[in-house]
Image: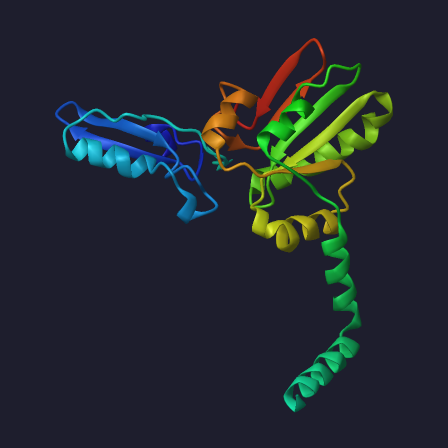
Length: 73
Length: 156
């Protein structure tokens, strides 16, 4: 992941859209806003990004920050 | 009633046969651990006295973090008498404080000050620590009242 997209830690989600010009990164970051309790999640970032792309819309939240372990590169 | 006393009997004999395990378990629960949300932690990142503060964000599940820890321990040991304070901020999951973090603290005899940060809203607090930080750990801040420097494994 690192050489292509610059992933620096785990978990680090990339949502990539295939376009005529090649793959374009549409979202980078966490899966959602609560890594401890799935029932307490308020924003599902990846789900929202994928849904927006499926509808042909812009991704609203393009990047989020989350704690993760550094990847050796 | 009969069953109850029988079970109790069973437990008692188990304790007797494993006294060492029992002692270790209770002492781990007794270990004090200050758990903060970010608002409570933030003052520790902005102390304006004459000391130099070394703040390391880490977790027991983060292999490179664990690898670095002995160096922070050495730093703490060497410089604590020279106005330097090391604070290790653990990002371990709360449900693993007793099962992972505290046993780790005991096993490695950590001497530096340790606090745990429990704040799920990382997208909000990570940029408050450092606007250039992606959230990758280990991450270290060294600061005094005049200057602040950030370190990470790959400078991100």
